[in-house]
Length: 539
Image (cartoon, rainbow, N blue to C red):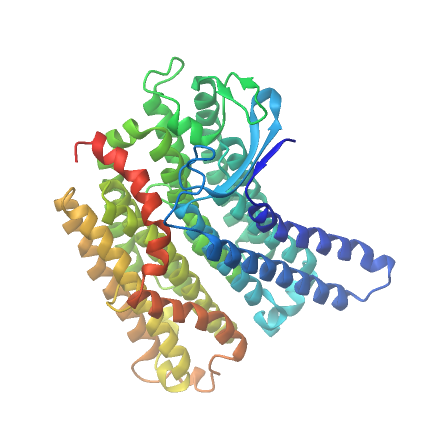
């Protein structure tokens, strides 16, 4: 391989969890040969997973501190505006497939979110994060396998956000599918096999559409120069596909069909109505730490993919479809909010609330304005903080009561006041209370969309009222009213639960008053992304 690189940091960051996965596999394989007791192998697997997630988090902090949001470092060097920490190598030369990674303001925010939420998910998976009654069940199904799969999943997610070659992007995208399938299907709840297969089939259907669209773009691309000086007939380089190619007159297939294929593939992951039905089943049956990753990171890959691929490579088709994106965003907001009102299972309510809140991202993206696009990506970040906290909260009550029926509680504020406060804070952040992070991102989405989609924005705003209704009704049923004597001795949150919840709660408050650390990272890159689209749309 011939490398063109400014830093090895991203490669180390992407593959650090995978290195931990390999060490866990070696420990599990050598344990019987070294006559190590099974608890020792399990404990070692947990330690290695925690170290892998911690090293990745530290490397992400280094990337964040070294990222210069005010200067596109490589614009003069290589023609890749706003990309930093680039590593570029010819991978499969015969088909011009490259190992090409880098981050801009859009992807670095998602990399930071991935590293943080993955670390918290590993913390929540440690032995004191598993209910006592489930210890034997969990251990019997293999602690090393569980920890190794989480590490593989983290590497795949980081790879998606850092990849700038479409083929490499697709490899990491597909790599996510297997660990999530097994994590739900082996360690999930009573209907785990059904939920895992449903997740697999939906995602695989989207992957097939993405593969066909990717091949179409590849064969429609122009001749390109490789970093070793040679030439190739076509390219998977997403920067070159966006900057150097015009797909308006594709010979083999309509560019609108290609755009739709890519959009549906990403919409399934969001999930956007009507492709959302896999999500509640997956969330309800998945272990709590896996729900944290699913809600915090995987859903964002759908909207990230639309911005990274559809918006940059097929801008004319994006303008053609933007009203439809806004309509489906509003459907997500209002429809899923009404469905939340009917839920009796706390985890399913939180799952449908994720569908609703991702609708704000679609609405802001469709507006093609700076406030709208900034609000959309900031909503991705904020939802990635709030939703994992909500699933951790659902896990706390399930660990103690062994059920999640909202109507099965009552008066819990008297017995678990700290837990009540944490639930209240997370609910208020999710419904968009001013002073908490959810408010700013939703407000930016509305500000950006109002001048473009006035009626749709007004309809979407009604979703905020419905959201407040179902959260307040849930609080009333669970924490107010007469005390349910069955739970009079319920214990409050412990130090392990504080360790996973309090950092997320702190971010909800800090970013609610001061969002600029995230907005400053991404605003220049997002402006460069949306400005050509806005000009082409006559805005």
